Image (tube, rainbow, N blue to C red; front, side, top):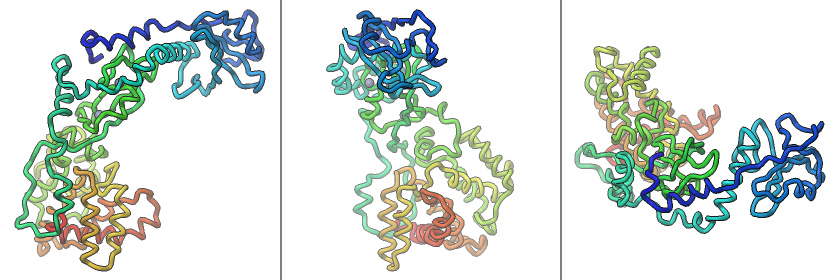
Length: 449
Ligand SMILES: [Zn+2]
Ligand SMILES: [Zn+2]
């Protein structure tokens, strides 16, 4: 429970309504029914009429029983008294009991939850409909009452501009001109947008929505929780929460195979630190290494590096004393990029890049690649920009390392670009374009980014 329930009057209302909701009253059948499925108890009355069920329930709020349908034998109906009438629901069982989305261990739980929901929706329908119109989520006035993490989240949502690294619009209007000098974007606190990763959640004990501050009612699946930052909100509120997820490092268990934007948000960096650290190490001692990125390091050692990053994060030791062979570091970088759940060149944009590479006219082709680059998510774009500038520098040592943009394209094509639907044929067909896209990005890195 994150909220002190007494700081806002409305916090109580829905909570109190839940407390007031009618309790389930099981109406049992006096005789043993032979047709009773083993997952129902004595509340099962066999095939009785709707009217007789009504009579048995005796008008008591919360009274319920199960009957076999007369119209469709073999199917079961939950008859439940609520609001001075008998409600009939088709009842299902597949290991759990359900009438709608939520699945329950017992019919008793299902009825408890149904009564809470019905009661709250009847008593507070208007209130619920308006619940989200005045979210506390952006309301600075409440922040002092909330815990540190929430303070950060709330104030950030209100005061900081969402993007600082670059304005997309400016990039779109910028013509393809050569930059005067190679320079890195100054390190700024990363402010990429990231959507929350909401999953239906069952809360133990009372919980209040961190978006609208109202109680999350029901017995199970009362709301959703973001598995990256731990934000708890109503399902209906989740659609209104801005894309300002700030992943909690304690919730991000791995570095490799973690979504790129999630990782940079969690570490508050511009690019994944794996990329920065590996490139720094390679530029320090590997630029003249023959076959850099083409020669593979021992896979056990590469696996070691992966484990070190997963375990130690940016404290991972990848220095020469830990791994003398630079191909291990190069291999770890490639593995990192290849294992991303969404590749650097995203599945969404994959075919745009492939189509761009097929354009015969060199200038239009470059223009099309540039267009596609601008549509990448900012963290992906930034990672690609940094990597291409590095690969360009690698090619400057071609005399020693024997690597040019073409063979780097062969190496990095399939690492950075993977078709959304993997099959042997597309992979084979697209190999040429994948190579070309990367090759062109290296060669024209200074005008493309
Ligand atoms: Zn989140
Ligand atoms: Zn809410």
